[in-house]
Every structure is written in C-alpha cells, then in structure tokens.
Image (tube, rainbow, N blue to C red; front, top):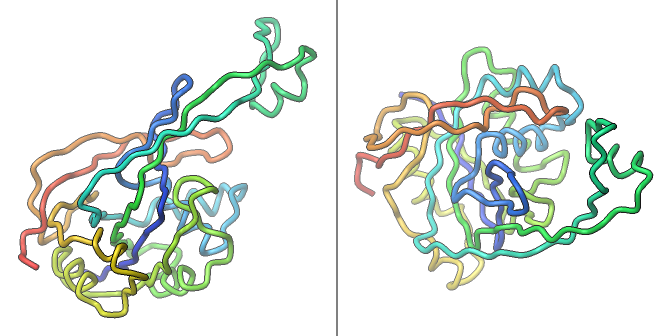
Length: 244
C-alpha cells in the first residue's frame, strides 16, 4: 500500500510545452514532468534561481496523470516576436542579451502557440523516503500557494481549486477514490460534462493497479533551470486495472 497526494488541474486553456524548434511551439496532451515539478515548487515558494534547492527537490517525487477530458480540442494562436539580425561575429547566451546588446534594429517574426482547451486532469504524487517536503506539506502549499500557479504558460492560470487530498492504496484505488470524492467541486453542468471516468493513465516508476501497453522516453527531467537543460526519462502508458 502506497500513499499518494492527488490534486486536480483544470483550465480553459493549457499549454504543456514540447521541444521548441522553429516558429511553432507545440503542446503535449498531458503535463510534462518539468511543468508539474515547477508547479509544486512555486506553491512551496522555491525560487527559480535557487538551483541547489530545485536540484534536490526535482529528484524525489514521481507523478501519475489521469486525463479526465473525453474530447480533444486544440487552439493555435500567433505571436509577433522581435528578432535581431544575425551576427556571426558575436555570441549571445540569452535572448535578452541578444535584444539588448545587438546594435541592429530588430525585425519581427510570426510564431505560433498551441493550447489544449477544457483540459482536466487528476495528478498523483508519490514521494521518496528522502524527499525534502512531505505530501502533507505539499498539500498545504497547493491549498495556499506562495507564488502564483499556471498551467504551462502565465496566460493559463488554474480555473478551479487544486483540492489536494491524500489517499492510501494502489494507484488505481487512489485515482478512483479521488474521482468519487464529493469535495471536488465543478462549477456548472457544462464543466461537469467534460469529466469522464476514463481508465487511461500515464505514469513513471513502478506502481500497483496499472497495466502498461506502451513506454516512451520524454526529455523533461530538469537538470539546470538557468540554462534550460533537461534529460530523458521513461514514461509508461496504460490502464487502471480496477473498475470504477
């Protein structure tokens, strides 16, 4: 029997960044590990520049994700971005340096941003014995976060309370308990309609109560926040083995 912290994520628009190459910024259908770690760290008040605390924090929590939106709806928006002229004689380490230090008049480039609409998830968190924060402490932080929370982009704040709850059991059991808990509030019939008891689940690590049918590598384990470096991890996809 394992202990899990379960919380919900819902927003009209979310954007879980994939590898950013070129002018299009794609979104995954589920939150990345780096996005979930960043959300917990923000709730706990860990600053982005505190590399030492983040480095320790990022090693001690495993996530499982249960999507609850039965339909896939996507939105693509465009942004205009300032782009200085190419200068092969000078090396810039950040885009801020490029804009400030460049002597040429910047041009513009159109870029696209993808969003997922009406996205609803249950997120399960399991800690290691050496974790710097207990599940109870994280639950308290999610109920009263120190820094603002957002779902991938600052334009995507949560539209419902995260309502963190702690359960014991297999992964399937705790997801079913969270789904059935009456304390999860839904604001209207239209929002309740997107909540469906799907058995589909994505997780990392080993858990009881799930049956795997696919494994993939995702490059979303943070290494260095200031340099935006990540490494790959193994992600499993399957079904909850116990019926709702």
